[in-house]
Every structure is written in C-alpha cells, then in structure tokens.
Image (cartoon, rainbow, N blue to C red; front, side, top):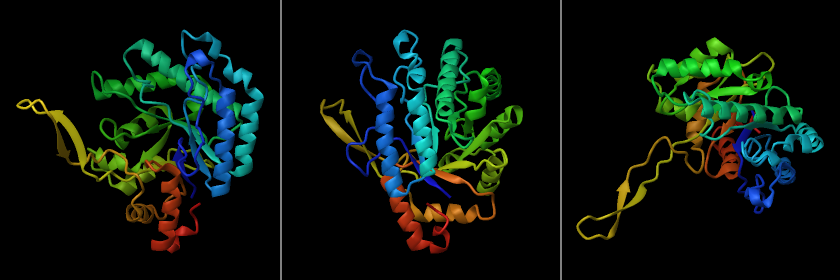
Length: 319
C-alpha cells in the first residue's frame, strides 16, 4: 500500500509546487516542472511513492483570453516525457484533483464547457508524461442545481462528451454534502468511470446508511483489472473554532467559540482511526491511500511511524 499526500511540501523549506506568478510576468509550465523535479527528488529521499500534483502546473493553460499560454504542453513535450520517466524510476504514483470551480454537471453551458476543457488538458498532461492507468484526474459530481436525478444525468451526458483521454483518466469521488457513494455508483453504472472512495466524506454523507466496508468494496470493484485502486483518507478536525463578529450594542469586535466542523481535515491523521480502517478493509483487493491532512508530507511520515508503533502487523505493507 502506497501512502500519498497532496501538492504542498512542508517537510523541506523552499519547495514550490508550481509557477504561481501572475500572467503579466509570463509564468510557464517549464518553471513548474523544474519545481516538480525538486519535489520528486524529495519524495525519493523520503521513500514516498504517491503524490497529487498541483492542477496549476501549466499556468493559464485554458484561459480563453490569454492565448499566449495555450501551447505550453507542446512547448514542454520533452520535459513532460522526462518527468514521467523520472516518476517511473522512483516508482511514484501521480494524480491531479482540479479545483472546485471545475463543475462538469453545471447547467450553465459555458461553465460546463470550461470544466470539460480543464479536465481534457489535465488528462493530456498525464498522457504527455507517459503515465500508466494508475494516474487519474479526480473530480466530484458537482452541484445538485434543479435536483439530484437531473444533476447525475447531466454528469453522465457531459462525461460521454469528453475526449477519450479525459474519460480514460477520470475518477469520481463521493463528497461530504451532496453526492454519496450510492450516487457515484449509479454514475459508474452508466459510464464505467472509476470511483475513489473517500472515508471522511462517507461518514459525513451517507443517507443510504451503506456500511463502510460495503461502500469501499463497491468502489474498489469499479477499477479495471490490473490497475490498483486509490482511496482518500482523512481525519476530521476536532479543534474549537474562534470566530469574530461585531457586538451590535458596543460596536466592538468580540470572539465567539464555535464547535468544530467534522467535514474539515485535521492537521494529522488519527492513527487509531486509520488502523481501524485498514482492519475493516482486510480481505478486500489492495489499494493505495491518498492522505488529506493539513500537515501534508509530515502527516504521512508520522502516520507511518504510528502504524509501526501501534499496529506493527500492518506496517510491513505500507510505504
């Protein structure tokens, strides 16, 4: 089982995940790939074998009014191939997860078209790197809008209109407030899209009360033979929140203590929750785990130590 983390590296100072300069300063994919090479070398040193790349690697690639950025994949064809080769040498599994502004099932045709273009370019980037079918672009279903059934059907229709590389690379994740595993399974039955099981989201939104093991097994079964599935795992943030608001009587800013929101990610992964999850999954097909924690790579490294300490019988297969 490979453990991974997303985008930002905390364990080594100075590692940037993409070229974040504004368009006036001519950012470029070539700069992002130089940054990415440094991250890959850090992952090699730490023995981390799974990583979610920034969805902003190619700045302004799909911006409709900045055509000077549209040719970055062609400009960097050799560099992309070299980065893919380096990933294979390291044994690194890669993925992307576009932002919440990518909404494939939007009733607004312009937004849906823009989202489809973004997914197509992300898939093309992975293809240009020469990555195998484990490298996926993960998305959510989107918004409910006029109703759940219509929203799911719009996703299916939009998926079917995507170019082949995007359909091949796409993986669909259950979310924490709108579309649970039952919804993503319905979409899979219509499209064949692979499903990423998200543990925390399933706890937060599971109106059918589907048992965790059953939901996990169903999602794992959607992946093609010979392609290792991936799942997402996170722990809920438990800290008290401090909010500020103006006191209408005095006009002063006052602090309010608020309970935590269970949908938010914690800094680190709760080791006992993760160990319980692994034991619940015993006997199911093997899968990799993308950790979603605010401490990023530090959370991953600590979790490996925690599993070794608290469940050494499980630690041998985790890296």
